[in-house]
Length: 67
Image 1 (cartoon, helix red, strand yellow):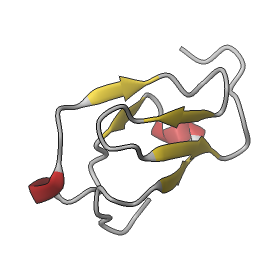
Image 2 (cartoon, one colour; image 1 turned 60 degrees about the vertical axis):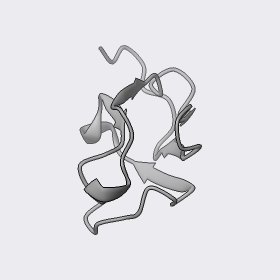
Image 3 (cartoon, helix red, strand yellow; image 1 turned 120 degrees about the horizontal axis):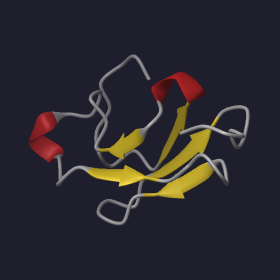
Image 4 (tube, helix red, strand yellow; image 1 turned 135 degrees about the horizontal axis):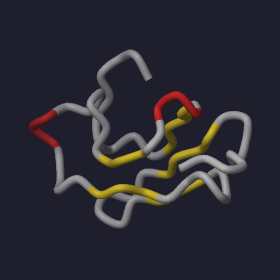
């Protein structure tokens, strides 16, 4: 996630280095944001933002023992 993205992007892949996950991410354009919400992605490897519907996929799948 190095390029700015609009908050209408529906699928975003992240790595374990980007945890903990929150939406909107710093790469999203500020004019199109909603309140920050932390998303539990570690156990399942995917999460859905309740505000904008963006789906996040954790590359490499779920993270065992991550805090």
